[in-house]
Image (cartoon, rainbow, N blue to C red; front, side):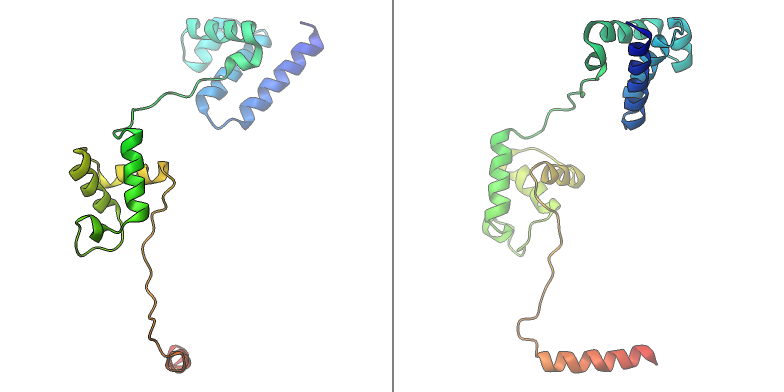
Length: 171
């Protein structure tokens, strides 16, 4: 690798580290950059408080695959509590029925607590309210409170109240 190529690669790693929001990913870029600048592996390990072996792994990945070899894989995370089929049934229920239709008598709007109760009853799976809101988010369901409008409201009475109310606010 020529001097210009090395300087270009160092600058590229600096730019990637500046743009990335993941602190661990920035550390990987910076460690390899320091290696390209000529710092010894043990010194790099001390700077980032990581093992020398980790630094060697970063450098080996870079040597084998270039910058693409430095990109960290997204951790898999926890498995979902509901299967795809169960999530589809939940989505269909929430999007096509009101709670009253599925046995939650006085309610006409879905909420996280009602969905928790429905899922518990239907599938035997327990969720917290926050966990159910996460399921809503994953299924692209918005979580909003209903707003009410008065159908029989008299527009002229509303207008007179609004002007009267403005007078009260000013005094």
